[in-house]
Image (spheres, one colour):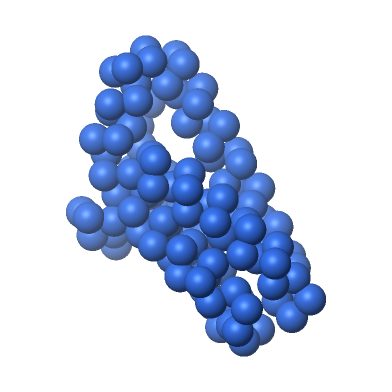
Length: 112
């Protein structure tokens, strides 16, 4: 279960209010697609040979997630980015799974 601070719905409401419902949801869809793609990529790679890619993808997820109020996703991605150079393979897999779960949970809280 997500804590209230894990997802800030006001960010998405502000986006939709500023851009209009159609464009706001379109941009949100791009975020979902890009972040989902980054997470799928992280789920498929080996940690040891891809540390720079891990850092880069985690930074991308963090930057986008914070803009949309996905606070837990942002924090987990930032931690992965910070630890990319030293994270063990089992810990990497655990962290990516937690990141993916947090993304799915936050995404499920958004209603059209």
